[in-house]
Amino acid sequence: MTRRPRPTYAAGALVALVSVASLSACGGDAPPAESARPTGDATSSPSSSPTAGQSDSAGGSTPTPEPTPQVHQPAPLDAAGFGAVVDAGLDATQGADLTVESGLGLLSGEGRIDFRQDPAALEMSLTSSETGDGQPIDLRVVDEVLYLSDGARYLGVGVDSPGNPFGASLTDQLDPRTVLAAVQEAFRSGQDRGPVEEDGEQLTVYRAAADAGAVLGRIAPDLADQPDTVLPDEVVADVSVDADGLARRIQVDLGAENGVLTYTLEGWSEDVVVDAPPASQVDDLSLPG
Image: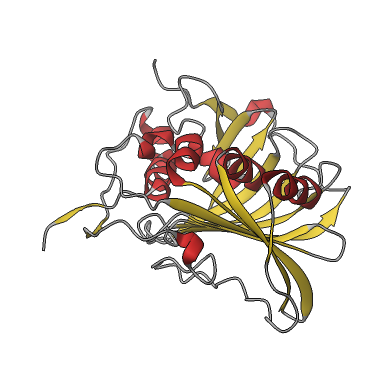
């Protein structure tokens, strides 16, 4: 069977991320390690699937629970309605504890996010199933500067700087507000799927289907431009909110080839603070233009 490099945005972000140690030690790029999977046809539209989060994912993403038909029949939701859910759910006056599982289970992170900044401020400990050593990498994003460290010192670079070796894709994919903004811009259809019970708590699920090419073009343009990238027709996003309207779980299904982005948000508070590391501990990560 013919095999080719796996065309996932998560793999691209991962290769860049696990090169941090080499960049720090050598001052240059480390050769990316290729991961492969069998070739396959594009998946059918996820909007016809019973739940988001059911892509053929090695990460084993847990599907969003289905509402009970006898209790609530899914109702149509337009773009403005979905946008209102997102705006309230990612409360711009608060922050929260954040857990992220990206793509095909290649990259995961735990930390916190402050939505009072735009783009959001992030502080996370990231690990990868592909590095094999389980060594976490400390990532922070504050005032549009990305900081990475696997030890005492940090490497820093402007998120939108031409010298950023990751581009903006890595930070875009870790911020659920940026990802859902891409879904809103490419919105095709939506549903109020009603109440479900997760871990003894009642949540309400809202779903949006969006043009996959447009979403990937926003959050992972390098992937979207690759001629061998296999995209589904649609991306499906499920946003589960609690009784206060705050987002507790977000799943963005990018198809079997690209996996599912899963965000879990807990401990919502106005007291979440994300600080940049001291300038004396930061070295320039920018690559030559």
